[in-house]
Amino acid sequence: MHCRKVITRLQAVFSAVRNAMEVPTVKMLNGVEHPLLGYGTYKVGVVPASASDANAKVGRTTAEVMKDVFEVGYRCLDCAQFYANEVGVGEAIKASGVPREELFIIDKVWNDTIYAGADAIRAQVEKSLKELNLEYIDLYLVHWPVPGKHIDAYKTLEVLHSEGKIRSIGLSNYSIEDYEELKPHIKVPPVSNQFEINPFLFRKNTIAYFQKQGMVIHSYRTLKQGKEMENPTLLEIAKRHGKTVAQVLGRWCVQQNIVYIPKSENRGRMIENAKVFDFELSEADMTALSEMTTPETIAEFKALYEKCTVRDTPLAESRVGVKTSITYD
Image (cartoon, rainbow, N blue to C red; front, side, top):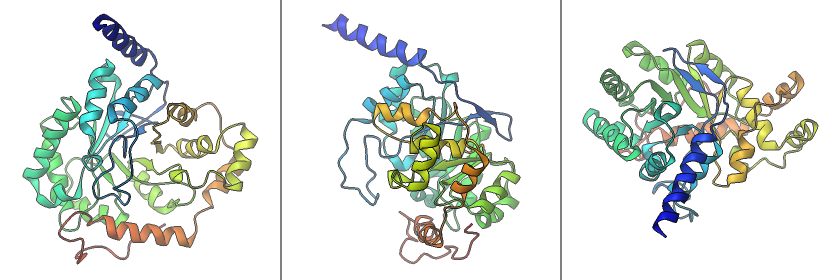
């Protein structure tokens, strides 16, 4: 029985090592190549305590899902302190047998730690390294620009970068105004900014601004949490290309050199979501998709931004320092 378990585990390791996907990359400011496709680990095996659906049931464990992720061929993982599942992700990394140089690990520091300051941030990075079974993190992000705190948080990441614990530093959910506030204090330029991007929330001016700054853009919620899979425009484009709606949304993203980070715990959908590099959308398709943003979705984004920049901090109730007028498009 013991031998059979060992053989099964070795077969899984060999499968994970063998099945790496061929994924195009984009070069970051520091010369490092960033995969255009990643796997999002949010709510994989764990629902964070302060999530809006904190009482939702989870299916398989984080490690079980991540085993499929590696076997399917994903090598770029989007992780975060807030996701509360780095132990399981780390177990899967260790068990996969995938060489470290093939992995690209993104991680983020959460608001409560940003608010607590430099010592807390250092402790969290050390904790994440231990839980993920890593000696360094490829790209580490400030998860939200917490008012009055995010500049010092970035400075702390610069120190950790100088120590080799972090290979690259990036931003997440930063508006143009947040970055302009940070910019005078930067010594190590941020290489990326991650925020929600899909045809229903396509903030063209914000994307163009950060790309002009030389940053790689990450998209989360590219698939709109599965809420638009029956959208007539998406269905029509998908049918024309012989693809699924998810694949059309992913292709729309990577065709703009925006990093696409889908998430599904279903192995079949993991495979489906990744098949975005074997077709091309027409200029008419791209235009149709890029014009689906409405004033209502911008208003929803505004409310979310104002809430989340202080979420899980002492500022959550008063919202002191929260920017109420930023570039929304």
